[in-house]
Amino acid sequence: MRAPPRSASRWRSRRSPVPVRATARAAQAARAAASRSSLVNLADARWVLFGPVTDDVDARLPSDLSLAVVRLARQLRFRRPDSPVSLTQLSALATVAKEGPMTPGALAARERVRPPSMTRVIASLVDLGFVNRTAHPDDGRQVLVSVSAAGVDLIEAERRASREWLSQRLAQLSADERATLLAAADLMLAIVDEGA
Image (cartoon, rainbow, N blue to C red; front, side, top):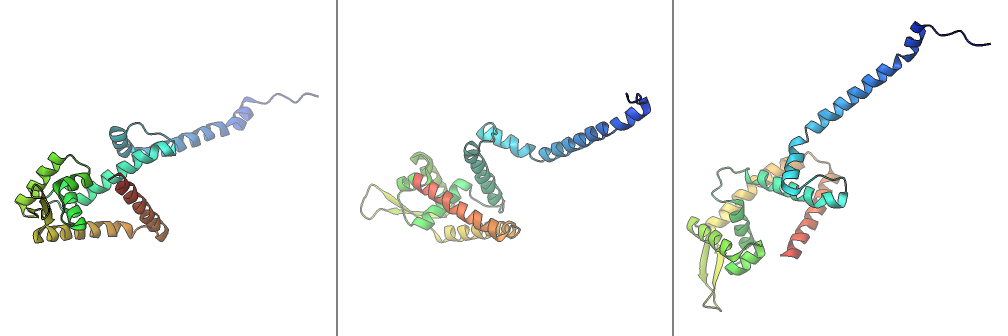
């Protein structure tokens, strides 16, 4: 015996979940779009600096890591907007402070820049009073670059401002996250030192 045909009203009632599901899907899509919108600037910056975004971890790691380093360096640099030196100058100054007196050529190699560029950086630091140039004790054709007392004070001021800002951000992370960052920092330093 065949079932009586369903009325139009009963049919519409039984199909009513479809629009509900469609609405739920639309809401979900809207939430996803809103979430993605917060990443637009980051994605744009990554594309401009390092090329298209990909889901391949091995392909993403170099670009994401490079972008993170660039942005962190910029953030740290602006902890002291009145700093008298650029990031390039500060990096060279910190290297000499860490490694000790060195020739301009050795400093250029350590900083991975061309010797003429390093010569200009050193000259600017000498003019600012942050480094000294002295004759090489063993090679009259060479000079040694060393950090002055004013240079040491500048490095300490820069480090203090950077540590303050970064410590506040790190305090918001869990112990595991901080340990992960410490391990990553060791790896990054090893990569840079190996290529120096």
